[in-house]
Length: 396
Image (cartoon, rainbow, N blue to C red; front, side, top):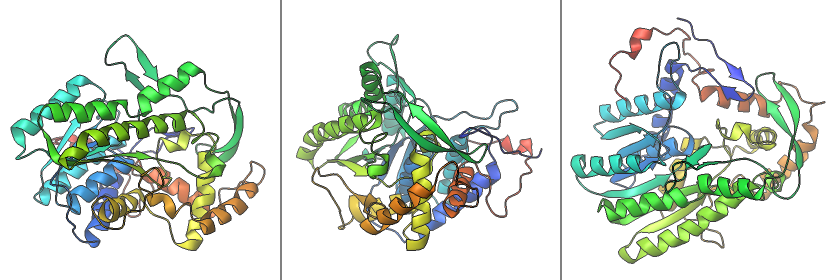
């Protein structure tokens, strides 16, 4: 069969497994070229199928030599559907790790569920040679069931607070810039978004692992956040997502108090912006990314997610080059937020409007290429021909 790329709005609806395999190999090589470093021995990555979770797993395995467990939640192949990109990422990671003599376990499960937590705890007890000493929380989800009331479902929203906001966003399907207006979130929506994207579930995981005796005394746990510049503040920092991140920071303080007496550590890392399937649907964010990518092409400061995560863990989590802010958060995003880069972005943004937008913009070309590669398309030298027999014998 010949694979055909499908993008609806800003949602990718098809994958090229061969392209995803090539991208996985390239990311592994990125880490290997930087050499090994001392870090975790056994890492649990929650949300390890893509983006910063996958980048964390890559540097843990191929930089630190760690055993890795990943909990991802992606649709597997079924019928005519070839599966989600995250499913394939997990498959190809496991294959590569095992070829390198590393232990890699995948769980395709909802990280929010108590049953998933127990599944992972049982695996650690029965199959690993020691407790977890790194827990990465990188879960991005549209909804979460209240663990105390299964009839209540919290749904996250990306909205401003207090007043409506109008901004421009990229429509990848039609390759144009469109205007979007968002109504302000209700108090109920703010609360629901905090339940889904704050630190509640992170705390539940840490406490469950600790109570089960499978968390090492010196365990480090980390959750990823984003601040961004003034240009995205009204939607991100000051909106529902920002409220959720403030709640996660409060969770970090409680977890630090829990873990620090035994040498453990709870960290928040404020990461750089990234081209991801989730960020592509944040109003206004994609236009900012076009300007940022174009500015970084000039400055040479752009990082892929795996490059960013490898630097974060190599230099800041386990190294001696920590950059922290007044709140004690790690700040690997300083390259993005440097005065020089943001000055260039500020000059470019007013020039990127629906009337002036063209698909020839260097920033757009890079953004679209990075977005397509998340699904395995636009990867140089990769065929779009796929034999369904290749699905036989795959172990997730």
